Image (cartoon, rainbow, N blue to C red; front, side, top):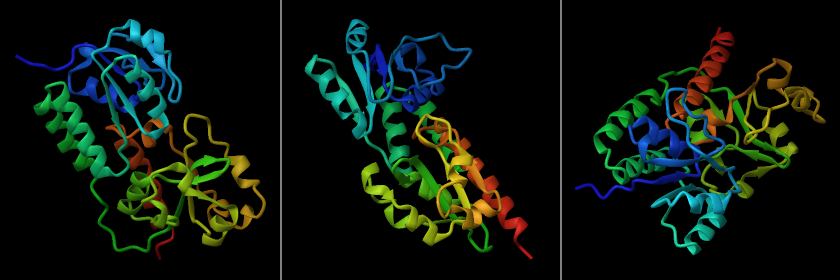
Length: 260
């Protein structure tokens, strides 16, 4: 007899997405507002943002498990535990950690076989590009004030796609505050491609171009500034395959355009 939880609240979008994909959606009773619920899935109450949540609403749902993600949601996890709820808090940063977390969620809901099948596809679609071409310099901007460079898995994507992360030395820094960089550092590295995803708010390319001194950057001069939707690059779940495809496509086109 399965002891899998029957009433799960997902305060992280990637957990909700994964449970839907592996066939455990019937066990989900509440989700974050940042999860776009599939059209063919029965709708669930939205009970949280990312750093905030309606704790009374969550309690009313009588969950036997609440799933949270990252240090940002640590205060929410603590409050829910104080209310007597069971909480699974994860803090994955690398691709290996993401895969391990998705596998863990599959075990939690007793959907190991379904989980492993999807993980095989996940690994296949995130395979590194085999190329001997010169690697374009890439800057990924996770936030614009202050400037925050890409989290570990984003840096891994850039490298796998054939680019050179200009702040690769920071990918081991797990907290966003440890990945703050300056305009001078960015300009000094002179990125040839700029990707940006500002944690849920629209990227303003004209504002990036207008930053003091940035008109001289190779990426600005050649118009190589690209927004990647947050749900495809900043939520550590299966949807990362879409963000990786965007990065690969841009780097591939850039390399082709400048290969003579």
